[in-house]
Amino acid sequence: MRRHLALFAFLAVAVSAPAVLTAQDSSDVHRDRKDIRHDRRDIRNDRKDIHQDRRDMRQDRQDIRQDVKNGDMKDARQDRQDLRADRRDRRQDRRDVRKDRRDLHKDKKENKDSSK
Image (cartoon, rainbow, N blue to C red; front, side):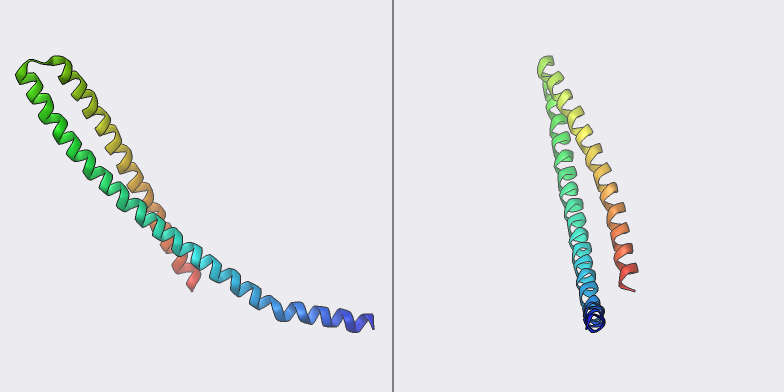
């Protein structure tokens, strides 16, 4: 009787194992696709931020020229600080884009390799 029960348990596990493994694979694929979408969204948002930083930098340069022309050196110094902050922010955003692109490429490659 024990032998039959053990055989039945073994067969039950053997039959259900492929279903469990398939569910895990579909979950991994879903997670990979979600990660790819997230990376693309990050790149898009960073590009928008870079574009906004460029606009801010252009405005800061105009403000500096106008302040110097008017002889308002205190405001010109403040605008220079703003310009430096915008440059730092733009450099950070560019680093983020490069990192996200590498991550996106890696995720796509892993997704393609896992689908084979």
